[in-house]
Structures are given as C-alpha cells and as structure tokens.
Image (tube, rainbow over all chains, first blue to last red; front, side, top):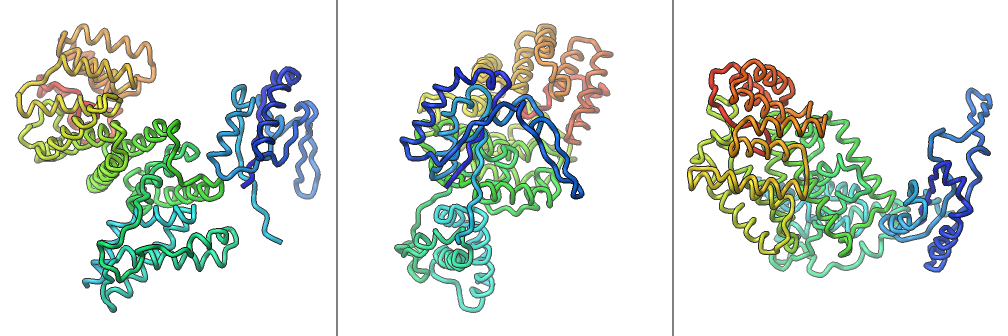
Length: 113
Length: 422
C-alpha cells in the first residue's frame, strides 16, 4: 500500500534547508535500501507558490500557498509499506517529524484497468 | 421461540469474538459487522424453523464468512482477501459438538485496533462498545449524550479510516505494548466515567457502566501480564459495589462518607480486592492500581468502621507523582483537611487554583472550598462557593445535595461530592 508522507516545514526550516540536506539524504537512502521508496520531491519555498481557484468559470489566481499558515508543505515522499503502522514508523524517522510535523495519507488505489 | 432466543443469546455472547475473527481476515471492521449482521438475520429466520445448530457460533461464522466472500467477489478492493476467506477452517462445521468448536479469541486485537492512536480519542470508547460488545449506535449515543445520527456518523468515519488508511489488526510489539495497553484501558475508563458523569437517564448510565465493567473484565483476562488491567477492573468493581448506596430511597445523592457500608456489594468488593492483590504481585504500580487502592481504603470502612486518612494521603501523593490530574489534586486536599483541619487545607486549595486557573470551572474544587469555608465558620463565603459548585454540577442529584447542604440544614454534612470520592 502506498502512503504519501507530507513534510511540513516552518519558514525557518525552508531557510535552513542546506543544513538539513544530509538528514534528508540519509532518510531517502534508508527508505530506498528498505525497498519502500516509491517517489517524492522537495518543493521550493512558499514565496514561489501561487494558488488557483475556479469560481463560476472564472479563474482566480492568488499569490501564496493554501492555506496560508505558519507551517507549509515543503515536499513529500511516496512510500510503499504494508500498513499504517509501518507508514507511521517511517514518518517518525523523517527529519521534519522532529522539527515540525509530518502528515501521512494513504494513496487512493487506482481501479485495475 | 427457542430458535429466536438462541440467536439472540449467541449474538450477545459471541458478537465481539465473531467480529474480531472476521476482521482479522478482512481488515475491515465495518464489512465484518455487516456480514455478521446479515448472518444474525438469517439465524433469526432459520433457527426457529429448522432448529438451532449444535454449534451456533460456528454456524454464524460460516454464514458471515459466506457473505464476506460474496462481497469480495463483487468488490475489487476486497478481492485480494478471497484466498484467506476461502481457506478451510478446522473445526468450523456447524454440526460438530459445541465443545469441538474452538476458534482463536482475537478480541484483544480488536481492542487495540479501536484504541489505535490514529483514531480520534473521543470515538475510541464508543467504537469498542460497538464492535466488541455489539451495542448499537443509538444506545451508545444516548449514553454519551450525542445525537444518534452524529454518533452513527462518527463511528462510520472511524471504521472507514481503519479500512482506508489500513490500520493493521495486530498485537503491538513489545516496545509499543505498554503505551497501547494504556490507551485501551483509558478508553474503557472513559466509557465508565461517561456513564457516571453524565446526567443521562439512569437506565442508560447503568448500561454503560456495566458494559465498561465487561470490557475491563475481558481486558484483565486477555492481558494477564499487565497489572494495570487488573487495577482498572478493581477500580470499576469498587465503584460498582457502591451502586446501591449512592442514592437514598428518594433518589437523593449520598456522598461516600455517609453511605451505609451495609448497602455495599460485598461480593464485588471481595472481587475487587482479589484483583488488586493479584495486580500488586507484579510490583509495577500504576495509575489505576493506585486509584483502586484508594477505593479499597474507603471500602475497608465496612470492616473497621473508620477511614484510614494517613493511608489515603500517601496513596494520593503516589497517584499525583505518577498521574497528576485536577480531580486527584482536589481529592488530596479533602484528605488533608481531615488530617490537618480546614484552614491549612483552604490555603492548599487556593494554591492549586493559582497554579491551574482551569480549576475555576471544576465543580469538586468549588464544592470542597464551600465545605471547608463552612467548617471554618465563614458562612457567607461558603454560600458563594456553594452557588458556584451548584451551577457547575451536571448531575441533578448532586445539585440538589449541594443546595441542601448550602441551606445549612445539615451543617455537618461532610464529604465532597466528586467522582474520586464517590
């Protein structure tokens, strides 16, 4: 089963990224070696974010992330593990768990073709 | 009618075991309950006509399993379960003699599933009552003072999360077991105190407290290596033992120290004491064992005629060191007042409120303050405090009791109404 491990970061964490890179590299490597890595990317800072809504057919474009709060989605890992307990164990090892928070979401299974 | 009674009896006794067994195989507690519900309906139809099978549980299990298999064939998300569901079950022949029908009791895993940290803590106790004991949502809703539709919806949502996030149906590993066991016990305790605290109909309160005791018994049996499980059972049994003494004939509230020990249930007290002794052999004290020990000191009044206040103070100190709570802090001051008089206790009580302003809304804090002010001759201030306590009391009988004491008709009325002292 696939889970998205969503990484939430504070503004400070976004700024401190160079110093956090080794921890994330080690985490990715551990996931890959355990055979659980299914994908993932880091995102650029929330200053680069643009939020789009379509209302009554009209496009509303707004500067900034959704929702605009202190902590923001900074990236995600896609992991493939047997169940939620395994996913939570891996989520707890993610560097963001200690610094801010990590959200775990099961990936919606696609219908078989 | 025999068939109908047999079906109802099997439902009552076997529900949790059957749901647990089916959930272990399909990982979906809602699907397990649905399949079992269908099997019970078939039983209600067939047993009165065709006779009761020799092993009713096996019959229900086979019928429910068939439903699940039918569903798995139609539903792609369940399809992967077919091999497991289809595998032969040894001894699972409904016509075998009852005693040959043994299947593993997986209710402990079900309890752990219901109290998984990924499930909203507020719904854990209702979920246990429904899946392990088979209580229906509307009865649970009444006990928790929630609209039936709301409770139904929250239960459905919790079960959907179990399936969709794939919360595993497993016993926690040794590193997680203590914390997870604590969560199971906490949810059972929450069910019991909800039954106790709410102003729900007396009959519903009784249902909930009795069901919680059933869960505690089950837990103590399934977790023999966990002294806190026995501690919780001992605590609930002590509270249950006082059931008949807590209300006077006219329904009015009787505080613990004024209860007639002759009205306490001696058999339940003996059972509580035996559980607590067993628990203490492990040499690992915990919050529930200490709370049970506190109730045990009170229960001893039935034998000695007096209350061992120094022992209570030691137990409250130990409890606060291990599991500090507002209720325990206030109860400790009530004990202190018995040992050192109301003035020192009042100072201590005010100190508590300075440290924790939330006590300003804590009914037992105000009731104790009123009582101590009254005892130290400050009638005017006592009345003010009684008014606050009355306004904060949820139980109408406790409100009436406080009103009665406040009117000074019974200036000697001592003890503080509050759960820890009840």
